Picture 1 (cartoon, rainbow, N blue to C red):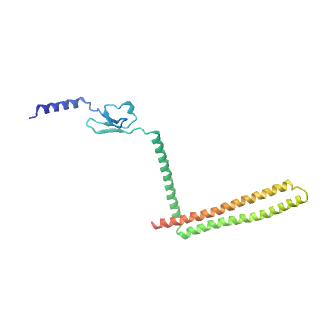
Picture 2: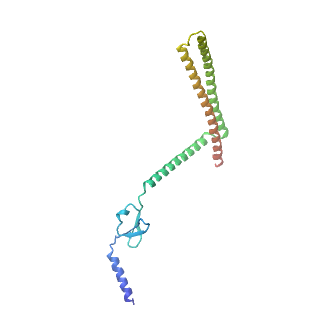
Picture 3: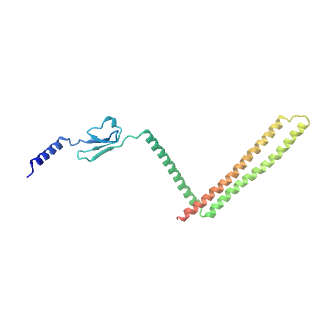
Length: 206
């Protein structure tokens, strides 16, 4: 036989549970002091804070994350951009590896392609150097002509001065081109050296 006190407690708990609507929920949040609080409504000042909704049995039925600060959103964007760039680099590397394996059968093929590009660059340099020699010869004649006119007591003609300046500019432009081609040749050597090493790595894993 149940004791009167136990019977009264059971009745009280039963009535209390019946007095709570079936859909009623408890909201829990963390206040500004870092203390967890609960109630039937979320205070307006914590509307942007994270909170949880519990049913009358204490189980979490819904959870809302707090709104992120501008700094957090900016950092998320920055991290996303970093990840996107890394993904792009990875995709490019995979694509380059596939092209490397599809294009060449062995290291000799890669070195042959390298030598072909270097030979084409050397030929371009040689042709430009030949043109420069001809331009320099023409320039020397014009400079000598201008000097002769000055020695004769006549100033060099305006057309002659323009021709001299034009030849000098052409020679300077060609020298810049030659310098660029020499740099290009070094880049080709370096790039193909990397291709050879990468090709060996890829083949070793097949």
